[in-house]
Image (tube, rainbow, N blue to C red; front, side, top):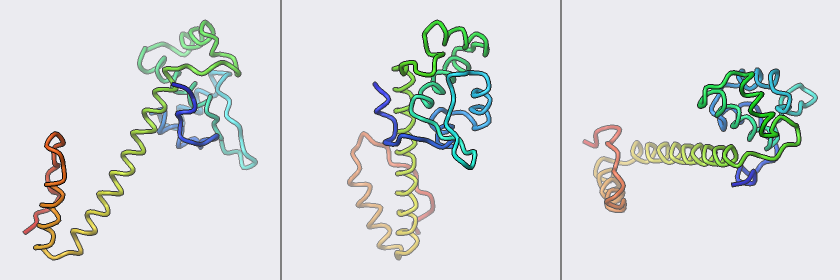
Length: 156
């Protein structure tokens, strides 16, 4: 998969990158000091703005440091060997795939959260008899292969 599978944006804020990569923002700032290829742009207000290739490199760094257990110097060596230590290096396909998957999961989480909020509003505003009808309709429309989660509050 390519970098075109990232969210449809050219630039990302540090918080967005931290979510996509799966680390805290201070870790990204530390990596910027240690790895020359990770150089986000800075706005006039000194806010970091990451490009797509920066996000992919950050995912690769997370994999090397957190999953493979390399030290910072070991990760630098691995980046040199693979050619990813240069600012204009090609994106790592595995990192691009991980970023795309994580972005998709975050989008699904946001949609589910919105749906849950809307359902709670509907359940709070309707009488109990209508709530049972809604629950029966939702339960009937869900395929058998998808488990129906337990109710958040009693209907009666």
